Image 1 (tube, rainbow, N blue to C red):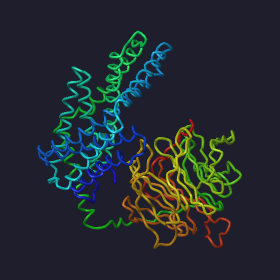
Image 2: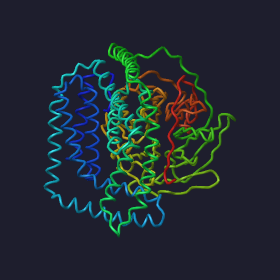
Image 3: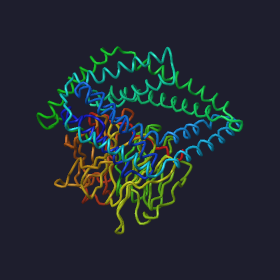
Image 4: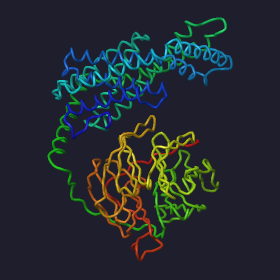
Length: 601
């Protein structure tokens, strides 16, 4: 589950769940991680820092003795891990300077990199494998020891706990900010960053209290933490350069650049700090108390009765294009052109509909199939086709092939795709010839990573508005899955079933997510599109004059039109009068702008 409270839990249960998740995550990263030592240590350290933010949130309920016990354990664990990774950070920070150096500076940079890399290797070699393993074992032992005590924490879980936790961290951060504004130093800036990060983690935990406000606050704190972290890394690098300077190792151009960059980082950090810490602590906690009260009311309503939904008028379903697609799919709004694109998959045809003109046209036809596509940041389209081929298309310029094919997909094709906020693309294939389909992640550099295998047919995908969950449909299972999604890495974890339609007519197909976080799922063989709450409860369904409803996507200048594609246009007698056509309805809610891909740009 995400690093935040769940309205379905009591506050105390939510805090304990989050603590267990972070502690076991840290232990797992160190014992059964990815195999990349630096990455695994970084993951474990991050979990320990989240724990320290959580502990400060519940400090008043824990009591000072228990708080100090748990905080020291998490702090010492993080310090042991830092000692295994610091040399790597120094080298990475040096690398970040390269592009801003002249020829002389780059020569100095190269010499220093060789020296620091050699020092890192010596430091690593000086620590025996047994000693490193023992250090990691010690951290795991400390982590698991804290985990065994979590269920014994004495938590009242009321507003006073939150007030004292957030208010205390904010108040201390405000004091550190004032110190840095008038008397900045490396140590003061580092201490301020700690308070910023604690508050950053607390806004994540408390995000359900007021999602819109917390999301904005969380983003600003994230940026501030990054600025102060980069400044500290540069200060550490400068110390290393001064300590190791020789006639052969020139420091001046590097130190000058570090000074300029630190000045710019600190100036931006202080400007951002003025906004974040401009409110008096008691005014902040008063505002949060109002949000807390509203959240409590929502929890009472949630637990008192299941969601039934309001009485909703059925929206008018309008047939905007009477096409006869064999498998119409992937309606995607192109904001740069104010037009909607969609495909007829097996025919290899790409269509464009202009709502203002009320006209459509076929803009492309390829040999084979077009399973799905995304809009790139430069307004071109990224097409995913047969045999795992991927190409860029822009009208009048033809296809630019990026991936000629994928060996294991030679008898298959892509079926559905979606871009994420970073510009990566999640692209799924379907089973063929006895070989299961797969879900891949196409990174912005054009590299492919296999995420799932044994898929029957990759279909609808979407992201929750808070960017923490990824929805995925493997149609033959007739289920909608929900994953935890990490934006920084693109990783999918903790798959669970959100919606199970095995007892209903039809199969979940393409889907989209609206601005309220509800899911709109097309029902292939069910003749409708269904809206579900974020908890997976059906809220409404809209019937269409086609048995095979294939996908849905929001469009229009205000994203208040829902476009729906259908299939079976080659046999309307069996599939319905509207089979293969493109429909539009106005459901009374808006969609979210689709993310644009940034592959090979």
